[in-house]
Amino acid sequence: MAASSVQEHLPPSLDATSHPPPLFDGTTRLYISYSCPFAQRTWITRNYKGLQEKIKLVPINLQNRPAWYKEKVYPENKVPSLEHNGKVIGESLDLIKYIDSNFEGPSLAPNDPAKKEFGQELIAYTDTFNKTVFTSFKGDPVKEAGPAFDHLEKALHKFDDGPFFLGQFSGVDIAYIPFVERFQVFLSDAWKYDITAGRPKLAKWIEEVNKIDAYKPTKTDPKELVEFYKARFSGQQ
Image 1: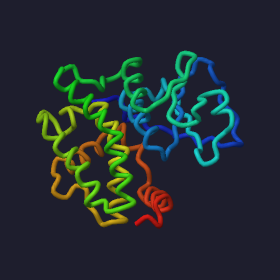
Image 2: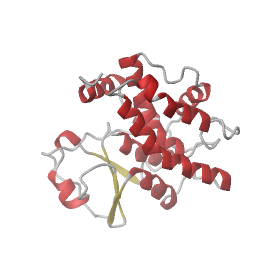
Image 3: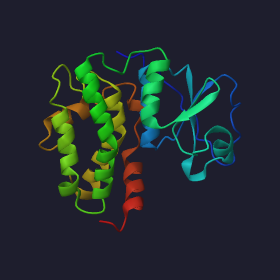
Image 4: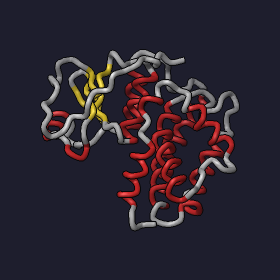
């Protein structure tokens, strides 16, 4: 299992009044927001590989972000981004791969060619999955988001050597869990829709991911999630 049961003191988020860290001083920094699902992907990756000492977390307040972040760190002005070896790279799916390939720790990529290929297909589907479910919040999620969750249920039947998408835990699980976590909470609260009903593999997958130490500290408070999505999608039900 991963070297990830390190109890970590989480730093406070930096906002417009905060000074920048000593940028490009050789420290590897992962810029995240505690509430952002894209950033959560990279945070889980770092934890799973046991890199809490090697990659410093720098949380940014996205509602009141510091000007220096855009000017000096990442012109895209979004999270996540990784400051490593004098350069900054972004995009969460790229960063899962980058952290996995460039740092020590348990691998998140399978060696088996069939798993590799299926993993790529599932990664390619993440944007469609997220878009389908988010769009359904404006209509009828049970009807419109159902097929997207069915797609995951079907995918979880492909390999039977473990409860995860590629059997064993991988970058594919990391790509999906931040979004599934949010969708499950919000759909249950706002629509009384249980995404695991009639989807035993999905239910088991969520249960097993929840046991992973690397994931636990990255989870968002469900109440906060519901409030955030209600504010964002209010009047659209």
